[in-house]
Image 1 (cartoon, rainbow over the protein chains, first blue to last red):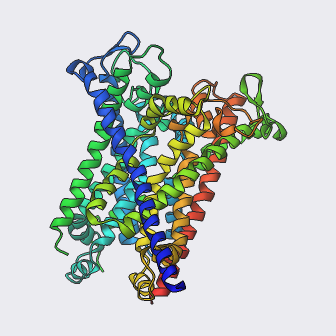
Image 2: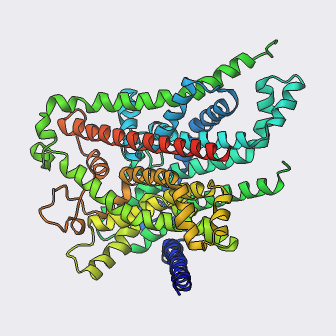
Image 3: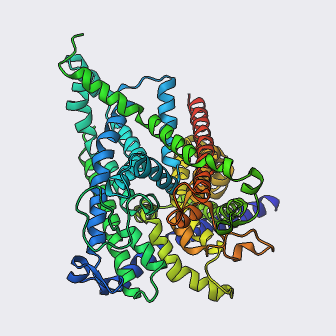
Length: 288
Length: 296
């Protein structure tokens, strides 16, 4: 009796437990899908050619968001200029050059730390170093440098991981044919790892495009009558724009708020989709 | 071996890029210290760790802010741990592959949502509905912040937990099954305990993600830097350390006491994230070593 009873109880437990896990997963995933759909539904009516290409009017309450879109592009490009070469080179160093010693361990700890520092602390750092000490002022340059250092750990770790997935026999063959280390990296391992590297770069920049706190005191401005003319000018940017119009503009039309959020989501999720496609295509084509 | 022309230069460039992370962490520490440590000279230590934050009248007590951060983070973990680990267990142990193919991108989307977008949704949707359902005077409370933060921490917890569960050798599961355990008993009796240090790493990184989060928390917690007088603090407005820096730094005069104190809070945040991340990575290292020992 005891045995069959025990089996029944544990079977019932299993059914309850498995369904509980299903429910938990469902509760986690459903709001995400719901929220994306909701933003599209509420934001789409705001989208128009004027909304995307005109200056804001009437204290942001009418007109377009063009300067914020352009500013976000500038910041993304500025970030990429600094973080991509440095991050990829650092990833190459760790995967291909570094030996397992104390210094390498220190480098690893530093990268883990950079990845964990809160974004607002990056903002403070950018203010202290770039804006004030180096006297760049609140500018695209200062904001891009701040964002670049913040995205560095993402680019470094994905580059490293992509390089490590290339089988070591590739390196052995290349070296045995007389290639130097750099020639091996340049001609063999880096091209093989390229899809992974590109994916990492896009994911890093995606993070930079959506960030607000690091640019608040280093380069973002609430409203500018003109587009920035040089990297030393401040700029409007989509995330900061969303923050301002949703917290500090009384009588802000809700439709414009949702429209602006939708535009930012389009960029961020678009980058995410591109990164995923590159990764999946590379996986399907890979011959090793 | 003869160096190819220019190779020496390239090797040096790569090497220096590799070391650059050390340089940046040091620079961050140096500049936080440079702007933040003067606060210790200008505000007496007793006042700095006082219970009243009211910068206009030079009250710079940071306890209410630390309390706000801890309150919101603990609340976030109460949501993030069960839902994050539960989702990870389901995805790695139970879900058929077609469900995985749908859910994994959904979790990635959640990870990619900018925090200002979540803050916006918090103001527009979450706070008003909490105010109504919970019958509160305002929906902008620590609780609203905690719920949003929970969702922000979930992708981190899910992905690290899933990795941890995936490294549990399959023979563990087979062994449990062979002894007559069902699926559920295998999960809770064998797989999850075997992955526990990885799961702990996931939780630690979730803590790091939550305590450093700025925009969403600033937008929905109601900006009230006060120590609570009653037990329902979770359902009252609060203010975290991160939100204080973000909302006040734009208005302070460079070099004022207030300015230095905000940088000092930055140092506190830096040290917290340092501790959290070092703990997490040493836990991860330990679980990796144990997995290697078991497999060999």
